[in-house]
Amino acid sequence: MRKISLWLFILVFTASLARAQDAATQQQIDQINGKIQDLIDAQAAQGKRLDALEKSVSDLQDKLNQPAAGNGAGGADDLKKLAEQVEELAKKQQDDNDLVLKELEKLGKGGSISPGHKAPDVSATTTDNLTPTSTGPQKGYEYKIQDKDNLTAIAKAYRAQGVKVTAEQILAANPGLNPKNMTVGKTIFIPQPQ
Image (cartoon, rainbow, N blue to C red; front, side):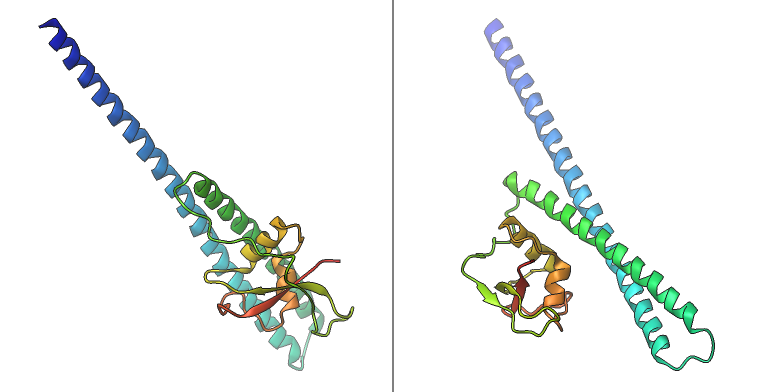
């Protein structure tokens, strides 16, 4: 009778430990999901602020292009301040994007999510940029846009391969490229910084 009681006690104790571990694991998963959602929400909010600032810059540029009846110097100062704010916001958004990518990589290393970007092959795609620039043709790489690509992720993938390029440099090297609506399969130029 004692053996049966002992085995029953061990069985109950083991079952309660298993439930406690499952609850702790679920709590950690919920915390990670909450952090990811917070990062995504912060990135979306910054994107909205950036859009509003871009519209304000565009409106101010339109005002500057119209013949001014009064004080033109104040408008130029406002435009300069607004441009600085846009640059600052763009940097913050870049930092947030990098933070989101780091969090996703951490989750990917844990085995629950696979990374979304394949590292580009930078050795096989060297080319000369034929677009006119003030300093002449640049050396760089061709990259074919893939599904769910964005300039930040592309720049990060190239930096991982030793090419120190930023999303802003890629955008500047590809006039007419809309970073919010990139066409899958389109080839873009990735400049090799001097």
